[in-house]
Image (cartoon, rainbow, N blue to C red):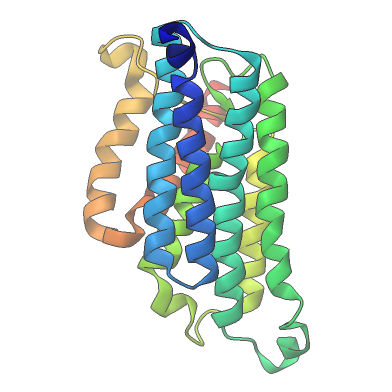
Length: 236
């Protein structure tokens, strides 16, 4: 009995991630973006601990891997897609674009589709053991949640419109599956030489979080993408 309970601890944590994703999606459809972001963050916490728990307890399993991908696509794919969908309902539509106001919100679900593709690639790609190829889905979800919460006033003003939002959906969706190496924050030790990029990322991220407040996560994700591009170019 005890062994059965221990074996299912990681899957239970993963299920909590999935539940958070479902709740975040519901709040996003209600335009309650703060609560949607809260449950995306909670889902990310559960996502961090499920794998770590499986390794500590030595109980990793094929079903756990499949469940993890499913949970991630809900929390980090569908929830941000629902956030963008609801935002499409609020953004300004120029007169020349007003005829598409009933259609454009559905393009937000490209985020969920490309997130699923990203997760499927990750499961099969042996190159992503210590770094990433393409933007990780949790980073994309945090970007959308933080952006909409922190910059809602600007995003729904006449200075921003549905075309810009559509372009942002396309760009972020393509980044998920792009053949772009992106570093991870896994520290092998605490030395500067082995973790220079991670330390630079963290040092710059702290003032970004302070300056941009609720949009801080979005600013940090943009910084993460930029630093990954710089690092990739410097290695070439």
